Length: 141
Ligand SMILES: [Zn+2]
Ligand SMILES: [Zn+2]
Image (tube, rainbow, N blue to C red; front, top):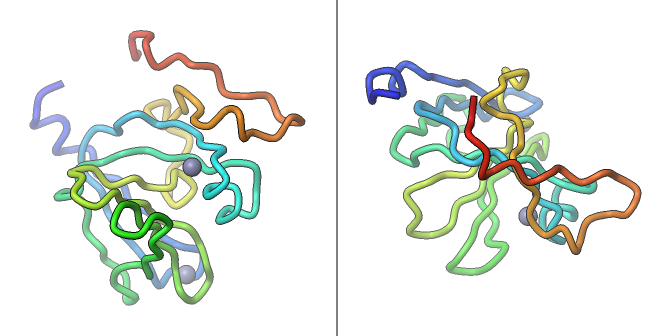
């Protein structure tokens, strides 16, 4: 895929109440679910679904600006959520050039490019839900 084509891939998203809105541009990187204890606790559910985009291609476009950030690992990882409705939006590892976006925050989720290709922290996963198979080494397409 050329840079020009990646530039044309613009996705929008936001929180439940609409105060936090964003756009991300570029090819989705490594969509996956995570069942680590932090994801479970913050989701109020058995897992969260993540996809990466270039941090420089993220724009906060809603009236609320950036989400509220909470350091789940101080000075290492922060998670962003809407301070009004609590929706989970993003995660960022300090210094990383990629921003993790909660797939559930995107407006269009029925996109083959967002299908999870792996599951992190399988050992922490609930036993009553099938796990996402690891297809991350398969050719995408
Ligand atoms: Zn909100
Ligand atoms: Zn996690």
